[in-house]
Length: 322
Image (cartoon, rainbow, N blue to C red; front, side, top):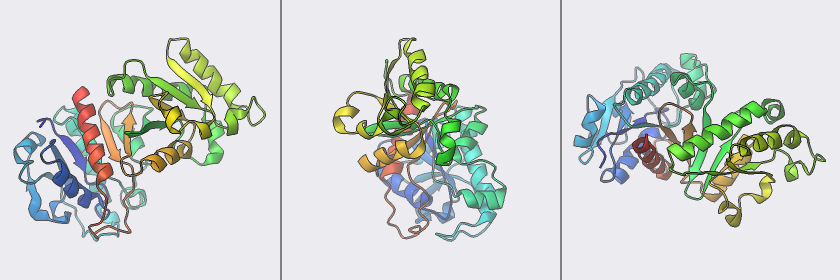
């Protein structure tokens, strides 16, 4: 087992994050080292937690209990019911985890899902989500969200915006940055020497020569041609409805899609449980399970830990490559 641990943040304490942390420890205790940042009192079985003072001590305790960097929540936690009074602590835990990684005291961070409204109501959280906050902590202007599973890697060029805003947001500089960051990460973190990237169109049939929209001719094709001139392995724009079947997936290492659902629907259809959210372009490694807080099943002991386990495994692998 590696002695440079992955850190897992608590996320929304009233969600399934605490349960998933404990289940992930049970699955991975003999495979890798990670420690959880949160309040051990909210774990399903607090007696399985071993409090430590520093991430470097996680390796000594991993086999016997879940290593925990304790962070006490100021108010009660009731499963399924987010409490805005705990919001500031949730944000502090994320920042604390990032600080450990940036100081090289841990190899990567794996974040459990947060409840954005609770953070906004209780802590004035001014970011659309985890990705934007982590970019702020990492002092970068542009981070990229990749969804990765054993069968597919996808990156949406535009993310959490209304569909009606996609055409105005999708510009050549944005698309070029997204492709560049993705390609660099595939080389540096996934050990793919010359990544093959397939680029979708925005419109049906990739615009069909301008009959169904001009974004392909105005934005996507010029960007592809500019980057291909550097010797990069790019294809497209492809019609998105023919890009995700098994034979097509064998022809590329990742897909750059134009908007959120165009990227996420295929991967969640192909491999719902094993999808992992990876933030590219940060000065540290961050992964996350590809699901939300699941407040409707919190506290029932029935949450599926597969995505969390895969997120921790990928974080360890990418952290080791850093």
